[in-house]
Image (cartoon, rainbow, N blue to C red; front, side, top):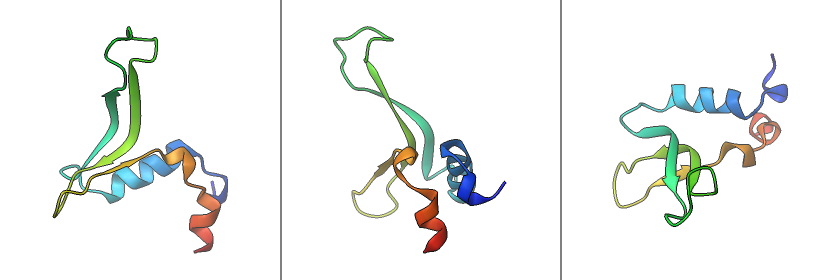
Length: 74
């Protein structure tokens, strides 16, 4: 499989292998609306959540919004 035909799950596997587990949490479940029941929009999910290294910056990434074609060309 070439990277140009890879999908979100392939990109997630690549990112998870590149980042040490002590700095990232894959498939983080977040409570979006605590008043809703499970299965009714209560939870949201982040593909990759990167913990801070220095400072107070955290990164939450939804990988479906990252086009692989653009990454390959750069």
